[in-house]
Image (cartoon, rainbow, N blue to C red):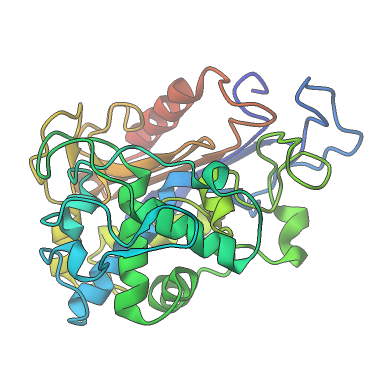
Amino acid sequence: MPRVCSAAVAVIAVDGVTVAAAVAGEAVRYASASEDLAGDRPPALRDSIFDLASITKLFTTAVVLSLAEDGLLDLDEPVAARLPGGHDDCGGHGGYGGAPEATLRHLLTHTAGLPPGRRAHEEIPGDGPEIRAARMERILSTPPIGPVGGRYLYSDVGLITAGRVAEIAGGASLDELARTRVIDPLGLPDTGYRPAASLLPRIVATEHKPERPGPGCVRGEVHDETAHGLGGVAGHAGIFSTADDLVRFAEALRTGGAPVLGPGAVAEITRDHEVRGADFRHGLGVRIGDPAIVGPLADAYGHSGFTGTSLVVDPGRALTVVLLTNNVHPLRGRAGIRDLRHSVAAEALRLS
């Protein structure tokens, strides 16, 4: 298994009941990018905490739909109405830079024409609240590279924008909105942005980044560079969780959304929005039938994360499948994560 990842936790639930769980590997295996073994290699455990990476997008989607249910947002309202233009103090345009007709629905289906990312942490060096705010403004000012409503173009910029719109509409930071609207109502004790230092012994290491302060091995802070540059909280990445917490979150979606969302909101998240140009169908924030993660569960929906995580829900079979790994430890590019995801999905099918 170290060829693919040094730590993995998989949980399979049928109709809300865990029918299989497996844990393998070490929470920290490598001491350096050269794959020298660490002197202390604690085992991965069922309650190990992983950096979810882009699975964070599902929490952002839940926050946005919760605000919409409360009448604080409209999915089809132009985003520009919430993010008026302006100018920042770092030489770039602030405010919203995308097409004026783009809506939250476009952002959550990756059809707003926005580019995949913007490395604002490199464009605006330094640290501190003002620097982080300037980086957010720089990201929000990113111009589109394609037409609104056009072909699918996966965009972290779009989900960062959606998260910022949620903050403005909800009158609180995104981490607070995620906590009060999703995490606390579902009772997810080990889920959230910027995990407390007391949780560090349970957190699994990710990539070796010698440019960051400390020993270089990223553990307990978000792996994603853009989210890190924004202070660890962003709409596209930054949430940490355990496999069991993530199953509970997924089960809420599978069974109608309570106590976070109503059935209508969940139906809107999980229906096919007929996006063009992707090799899977797309809901709001979720991929349907994504061949990278669903294996034989062709009609399942969910999302993957760059760190090696995935969440898959098959409503027809009452299945929830969670796989958490640290595929980027100590470096990205380790082969085999797709095969591992497919193997876990195939085992779920066998057990259903």
